[in-house]
Image 1 (cartoon, rainbow, N blue to C red):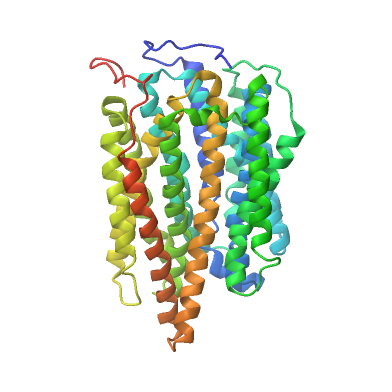
Image 2 (image 1 turned 180 degrees about the horizontal axis):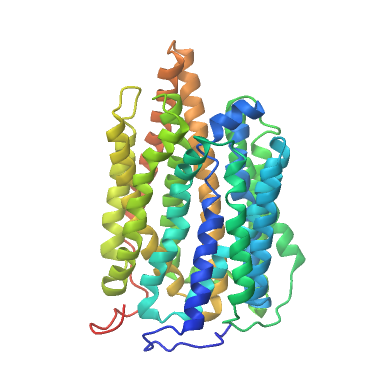
Length: 487
């Protein structure tokens, strides 16, 4: 898929049209991704108002990621078949409709339905943004732009709890959607006026079997992982092994189908991306890092409210500094990437991430709030040094024809990791709490024990990310920026 306005590697500046489109995509993506975690602080309030359990309430976040994991695999096809403008308008229309439905929801079922429709639009937006950047931004400036994209992908979820905490301090939970709706509609209106097509489309065959297999594969895996939390509470709708086994078998069939179709360039998700070593290494690290990010985002608010007894507003404000740290670091790291490549950034980032997760294992009912803030900032600092280099080096190592497929794969696995992180952390916290209660601990002590269990295993897994970070290399087709080049 060739860009309509091809930028040669030596081009230093983006034209006004490209800047406008990328700017609108960035702002719109920030709004839609923010909603992925906006429910986390609201879970205790929703559990009381809607009379649901924590594992059930978790579905408002996990269901969002489940939908994204189902829709995103098809974006590789959509980005080649349909224009940027059409996809942008479809994405923002779906997101706006879902936001309205959630705002009007009288109960859990309709609220979950609104979240699913929101996620359908969100699933299109991020691959659209990444593919547009890869096709229009010169190689030696991609780190800088990807640094800004990292604010969208990682910082927006990180500040979601803060936004919801501020809203819940003065308003009903439905206002989390009423306040977002006019922003979404404004983005939709501006997009209708300003978004132009920067890439060319081409007719590609649509394989229905691949869509069905990917839906069952990724949907089954996330559903099964999410059901682990309900199983721990004795509320799983079906035995956990059934959706997990069905998802795994469907994934194997999906992979086999794609390997067959890609011989004739007809794959829904072209797996030749995995022939790139930088892409594979980055995928492994992104999986572990996203599990840590979303696991922390779901457990920390519960810890602050159920163990330390803080309000939703206090919780949101205490998590804000960590989001600010990542927001400040991401563009700086992007510029550094253009100069030094990924390895000098990713290794220290992985070390900081591991240290932060081990520090979080010390949380209990007597932990000073200042230490919680410091550890959360440290966690986000580590992730800030990881995400931008990984996004840039992984996708930048691919041939141009594989950009849309690489973006779809990266974002699909990212959602799978986020869903797995949320489910696994909640499950570990639930089982740890239950064990402590059975041993005679009171409710607060038991909740603190559950938090410790969740972060302990998160810290163990993060050691693997640290080991993999030493394998990260700069893509062969991405040379350092010239000393006098524009950044």
